[in-house]
Image (cartoon, rainbow, N blue to C red; front, side):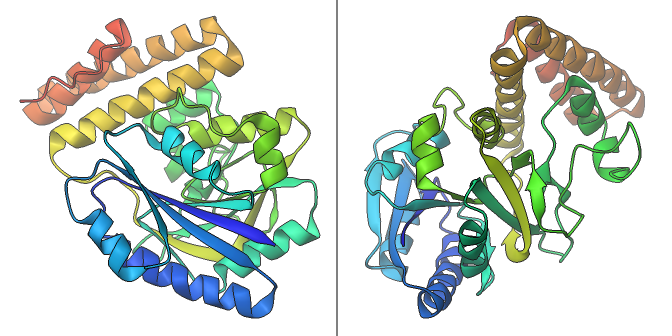
Amino acid sequence: MKLTVIIVTHNNAHTLPTCLTSLQRAMDDARARMPLQITVIVVDNASHDRSVEVAHSLMEDAHILLLSENRGFSRAVNLAAAQDQGHLWLLNPDAFPAEDALFTLLHTFREYPDVAAVGPALIRPDGVIAPEGARAFPTLWHEVMDKTGLAFRRAGWPLIGGYYLGEELTPRPVPVLSGAALLVRREAWDAVGGLDETFWLYGEDTDLCTRFGRQGWRCFYQPRARVIHLGGASGREENRLMLGLVALESMRRYFHIHRGRRAAILYRVLMMLLAAGKWGYWILRGDPAHVRVQQAIMRWARTGEMNSGVR
């Protein structure tokens, strides 16, 4: 069996040592238990830190693809996937697989030949299972529940819950898997043409799983495989807000592609109304930083402008 591990980096020198060390242990364990030929490809999206040097020093046999500008996650993954013909393991640089995680995911492929993608249980740094490791297909109601925080806090409740499915630790088919540590069958990848590069960051995993389902493939949640995932945006407030706006735009695009123009417009209207409500709340609380965040979201909802406006 051939496998290509793809890690896309952008200023991840602080997490890469743990990621690559954990990956090496997982690869050694899998090789010891099944015939396996593995290629590791690190695609660097124009990092300004020591990400490339760290990757070279910790995994000398890894292939490094250097991009002169940040081309986005989807484009970087597609470039790497074209370098080899094996199954694909998309691994975030802040994801640290347990020693038996890779073997467990690959073994699931052997058990279920109609499965296009397998995802592990994602574990937060505090040891809690991240419910977003498996998800339902997005709906406008789900997105409202998500943005109000109710989708997480009431995951098991009728109507309010049902979006995030990762807390139920039963191996089973699910609609959508997180792309943080996603194992993809090469045949299925080729059948759908890889990631949609119009998703610059976020949403590409939801879109991919949706397209798998439409072609008759299944996605499978395998919580017996465990991967610690730090998650969350790092850096200054402006960077975090910009990534939040990118996530909103990615979901708008998802609705436009898979639910139609009206759904995409309604999504923006709903996000505008939620932001307006939060804007009023934070004004009353006297918190100017949160007020500016909601102003940036309302500006995006009205105009599509991605400038965060934070100074």
